Every structure is written in C-alpha cells, then in structure tokens.
Image (cartoon, rainbow, N blue to C red; front, side):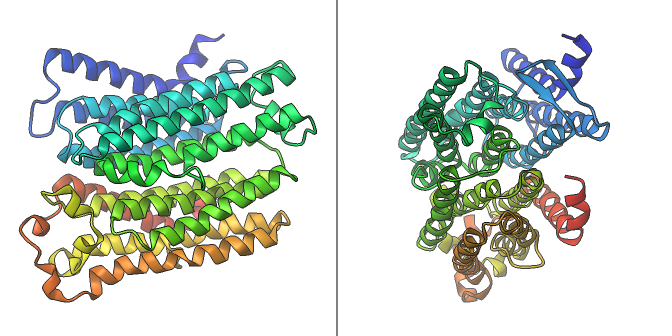
Length: 469
C-alpha cells in the first residue's frame, strides 16, 4: 500500500471529507451562519470545486492507481466521471442559498457525494455497498430538511422503506454471488450474467433489481414522485441529477465489459422500456412540476439502462454524455424556476402560465431545458438519445431500439405543454400576485447562466465533448 497513491487516488474524497470536518467545526464554533452568504456555503462550494479540479487534473494526467487492491481503484475514465458528477452538485449548492442557512444541508450533501465517489471507484461489492449507503442515507434526511409540506414526512418514510428494500435486495444478491463464487470481487458479476447456475442467476436478478429501484425503474418507481414533490427544490434537483448519475455509473462499473444475453437481456430491456412508456404517459397528467420531472426521470432512467444493451466499449461514453446533458438541463429548470412564497403554488404547472410576460429570462431558460429533454435537435438531449439508440442498434437489438424510440416520442407532449403554458397563455394570466412576480435571485441567476452556457457548449460542439469522455 503506497501512501502517495492513497493520497492522490482518493484526493477528491479527501477534499470532500476535509470540507465535512470544517463544516462541523464551524457549526461547533457558531460561525456557519454568519454573513449575507453563510460561511458554510462558501466552505462547501470550495470543497466540491477543489474536488472537481483534483479529479479533472488527475484524469487529464492519465493517473491510474489501486491503493486498496481489489476494493478501490481509479483510472482516467473513473476520475473524469467523478469530476462530472461532482461538478453537477455545484449548481445545487448555489441554489440552496434561499432555503438552507445552516451547515446541515452542505454537510449532508458532501457526505452523499463522498459515497458517490466510493461507488465510482469500487472494485468489490463491499466498497460498492458502503458507497451506495453513504450516498443514500443523507438523502433520506435531506427530503425532510426544511420541509415545507405536511406530506414530506410520509414521502421521506416511503423513500426510506423502499431504499431499505433496495439495500436488502442488493445484499441478498451479493451474498448469493459470494456463496457461489467465494469472492466479493465486482468482476464476478459479468461472469455470472452468462451463468446457467440458478444461484448465480438469482443473484444477478436481485442486484439488477436493486439498481432499478435506486434509479426508479418501473415498477420500482413509486417513491420518486412523492419524494421529488415533497422535498425542497435543491434537494429535488440533487436527487434527480446527482443521485441518478451515481447509480447509473455504478451500474456500468458492475456490468463491466459483459455483453448481455438471454434471459438477462430481456430483463434489462423490458423493464426500462416499460419505464420509458409509463414515465412519459404518467408525466402528461401531472399538475405538479416536480412530479412531472419525477416521471420524466423514470423515462430517462429507462433510456440510460438501455445503454447496457449496446456494445460494452460504447456504454460509458454514451451514458456519461447523456448524464451530462440530462443533468445540466434538469438543473437549469430548477435554477430558473421563479421564486414564490408558497412552495405548493410555486410547484404547480399552472404557476408557469404567462411566465414569459413576467419573467422572460426564466421562461427562455426553462424552454431551452424542455426542448432538449424532449430530444428536439439541435439541443444536446437529441444527441444523447441518438448515442444510446445507435449503440443498441449496432449491438443487434434494433427492435428494442425502435420501441424505445417510439416511446420517447410520447414525452414530447408534456415538454411542449410546459412551453405552451409559458409562452402561449393569455398575458392576463401573468399577473398572479407579488410572490409570482419575484425576480430570480443573483445566485439562482448565476447557476442558470452557468448551466445554459455549458448546455450551449455541448449543443454546438457535441463531437468535441464526446471525444473527451
């Protein structure tokens, strides 16, 4: 075990841990809430930003090491994925300024990000489980933190119970794998995918279903709409973007270079396909923006798991690009969402009627996000879907690709419905009270501009971005 490798390989995690310790010290000293912008927020932003910088620099330097052989390792692709996921957490922290004044939110968020970092470098199911739980447990608390609705407790409980079910399924699957192979090495999963042994097949199914539950794949999605609606806006953004990204990248690491074959192929194809169709259909009927985003996320999780049907060498690139586009656009929606005194009113889709007349910038930002999430060219959402379906067709699964593509067209309706509300509603609907007329605050504006600038970069130079993933 080399001390230098431990320091460098885990440098992003060490910086997050340092941020957590500093935040706790600030809280004990009573300094976390001082200033117009709380000191705790600056510390959290500095910790995450330096972790992003460290992961990116190590990736550019083609650094690779295994400080804990068989349990934890990094390579340039892993470090780049970490930099991407951690960077997506920065707008979440910036937009949290309105709703969280203390150290609780940044401490919990940094703790969850630490778990994400462990997951993406896991070489054993032991490390993967530790990372999965470190990522998930703080989020259960975040749903309740500074809650503004009486149903938040029920939503957090539902999330906790179903999250516990996912953990139990994952551990049962891992125990069966260990029983049949005698090792916890993550590489055994790829071999077990093609095994005829009933115990190995049962283990594989349980692990896959655990990932499906964490990512809100139909029929394991029931927690998502309630949790997204009940949580505050920054927490919903974090669940929709960072948690989903962590789960999908961890699933890619578990599947490794394996090429799916029947019957596991059908399991990984049919349930994500059902998610694409049901997520898009259910989103059409939602009166709440956050519930609509939740069902939209169910559909997008289906697209992401479809990537596993493609050739192994193209999976990471397709999923990473998709997560980049999907994450930026969801963050843009939440950052640009106009503030309101009543959280329930702010969350209603009707609240967006006539938005262009009272807040043109917010309407334009949300409109860009909706068009891209719908997969309309030339926005990056189109390129992201194209990469996924191209790889699926190239792997010989054209039928599934066509069905998924047809299912994706269902989502165009509800995305365009939001645009119709904002731009085509009667101007008289724009005047809905002082709370609705409040302009975006400076930090929300900064987060919106950062997200839209990166979105435009990805839209104009998709080939340049893809070549670097």
